[in-house]
Image 1: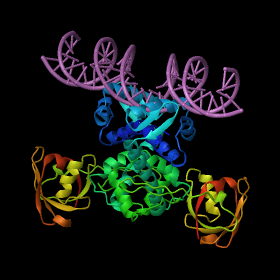
Image 2: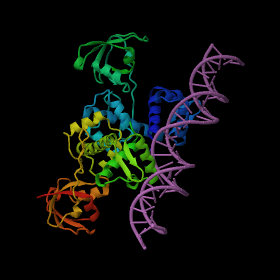
Image 3: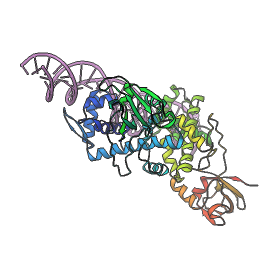
Length: 224
Length: 224
DNA sequence: GTTAATTTTTAGTCTTCCCTAAAACAACTG
DNA sequence: CAGTTGTTTTAGGGAAGACTAAAAATTAAC
């Protein structure tokens, strides 16, 4: 087995790689809240372990072995989030913190049982896709709400899961994965709020001004 | 928070104290599978933390603060075992190993939700009592099957949970907490097997010779 | 009651793991 | 090419936990 730190680094490489072309030392340092020097040290260790390839001054990339571990951890994380939410009623803004701990101790057997009990869910409570048991993972890159033009109809696809306050805010607006909405007004490339009308759920019909930061972390898919 | 090692030591002190008058260095060393010198070192640390009282060459005892932590960990452990067994169908010989990991990462919130979901169970799958939310714990000391005389009728109360093989063996004989049985023959103070007739469950009517080691780890309560 | 055997403690080391600050270095920018 | 930015190296630290070997205290044996 690997240490939690190793798993956290691999997960971070995978997650940063989702949006960035190259995974840099400083990006990892920022995400993991450690110094760049620490990252260099750990990354060299991971390279020796053949979990990443590492080119000085360029960046890091996962090897197949490393990717397997990263996706395994992500699967654990998202499955646990889903389980806590669905089976135990843990609010969606709390599941992330708990899953951060559980992801490192979950056995494959219990993982499979949770998956079964939930009916093989495909997405966690924040909309993120759960990797398959065979560790396939396709992460679509939905556009953020912040970039939608006025008049667009869209459905909430995913909300960033790492900021509980953001989640409580967004949840308070009635915006969850699957919720349909219409963009009333938007200020593209500025940092103003996006006004939306909620078309679904318990806030159906309500109009809300969604702050820019939230709109940048709330991803939607277009509706034709 | 405390480290896993600290929690493990406190739990071990609590569990040894259940049967032994004094908790010795060597008993802890044996249970935790470390050298006696290591135990002395850690115990001194725990004493500084005011989690145990410690008298050189005599033994260790939990303080109230230490006992609270120990019982909290035991509550986590047994609740998780019960949850895994009841809610996820994990076999009773596997729950212990998983709970050993989970007990250190379970939040109070999720603990309460598991307790609720299970309807506030009082005993884990091996029959051991689950401490209450207010951390009260009474551990009755049932006699082992090995000490029952021929002709006695009894009900299985508890089975030691730390040896999966033993649990599979005992389970294979149809002996679970709550199972009624009658002692057919017994060799007191020797190490021969105890022959029992199962009066309950899927092996009802069957007669089994229970090996001495198993009979020493299987505890029963008398039936008048 | 002395000696012998057993436990326990001291004392000193080691390993693992991860982190940091500061200096040196490479790569881009204009 | 000179400066800025980001990265790596160097050098070091410290927490956590465990170990060995030898000394000390306790207990048991004669």
